[in-house]
Length: 214
Ligand code: HEC
Image (cartoon, rainbow, N blue to C red):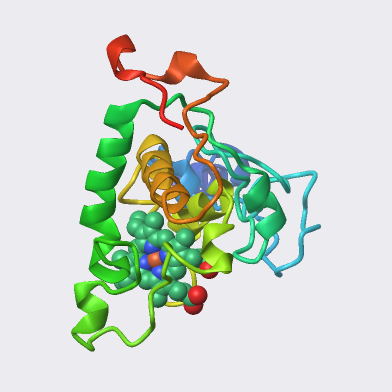
């Protein structure tokens, strides 16, 4: 009897040891391992060099990166007028495009800059918008603005003027620029030349609409 008791105790103790050992432990399946075991990464400390060779988190695009479909590098500053001036339109425009530019200008810009482009839009005149919108039609300053500079103003805004990048796609922005340039040329600005383009393949305008506008 005593032997049997000892035997039972022995079996019980052995099974206890075996079942508790690390070796035999079988954890259940992890449903979402990437959430349970987080990757140990260094925190972002605001410097460019952080773990640059290992991961790709929290990093700015390489300097000068140009996003697809965009003409300007990512993160160029509002004051980077050199980059803005160097940017030129690569579309071929015809009369219909200029008409469309006018339509878009009246929708998006005229409320401040005025239907006549003279800075006398209804919003400014109502007194509810304190900043004087630029008079794009007269004065040395704005008449001399390059097409790239106007495009830049549409993409990034300027002081109290917000960005219109989310409302207007690349081509629509250039159509507005073309319209502004055309009106400026009729008001003492440089000759209007935005009908020539190097990238005519991207143009969707019908051939008969491509009458030259100078
Ligand atoms: C809510 C009012 C408002 C709207 C809408 C608006 N602008 Fe302006 N815009 C301004 C004001 C104000 C300024 C003057 C900013 C300054 O010089 O401080 C300005 C300045 C500009 C300039 C000169 C930028 C520079 O670098 O000096 C251009 C070009 C321009 N706007 C074009 C446009 C075009 C194109 C649109 C439509 C897509 C537009 N704006 C819509 C208020 C507006």
